[in-house]
Image (tube, rainbow, N blue to C red; front, top):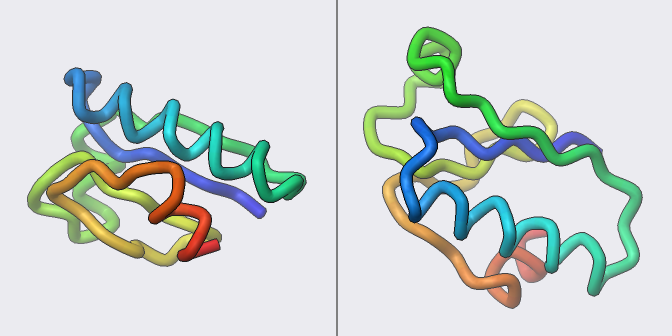
Length: 75
C-alpha cells in the first residue's frame, strides 16, 4: 500500500503525516508513506486544497486534517 500526503509542508500537512503513520502502525499494515510537497505533483491529482490523503493513487480527502482513528477507518 502506498500512502501519499499532499501538502506544501504546513503544520496541518505535518500533522496529517504523523496521523497517517500512527494509523498504519496501529492497524499493523505494511505501507509506504511519503510526503509530496511539489505543487506540480499535487496539481496532477486535481487537489485544490491541502493537506490531502492519497491511498494507492486515489484521493480520499483534501482540505482537512484527519485523526489517526479517521484514517484507520479509511484504510
